[in-house]
Image (cartoon, rainbow, N blue to C red; front, side, top):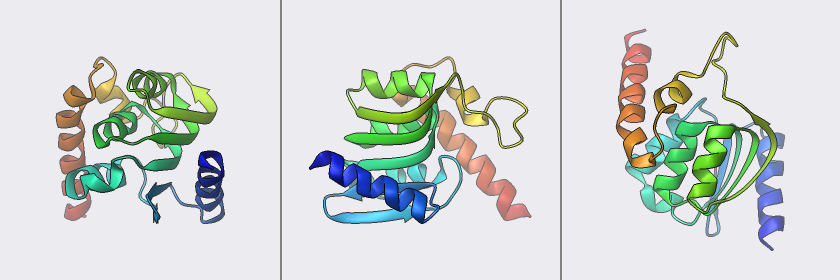
Length: 147
């Protein structure tokens, strides 16, 4: 049954061209923001929605993995997962399946590491990553609001 539910989320992720699909009990939500923004907002504003949820995501880096752990996510499918993210999810006992593992997530330009993956690179505890991720989201939101 669990595999059937996850396969439905994965199909929805790809058919709808979403960045992330999350199922909590019988409620399914779709998200289209890039990066960790939707996960961060959920953790901050509706943490109960993540507790015990199943997530299908296109790209999971270490920062997203930390947010999923802190939110109490139960199972994750990632099209692409970084090795550091995989370690964070596995150490938290989260059921993780993926299509492709990469050493790290690249930035959008493809010229180097994703900024959130870089922020979290030397940390192992999700609790230690959260303040850095929060600051990143605040700074990025300020930049987009100023445009």
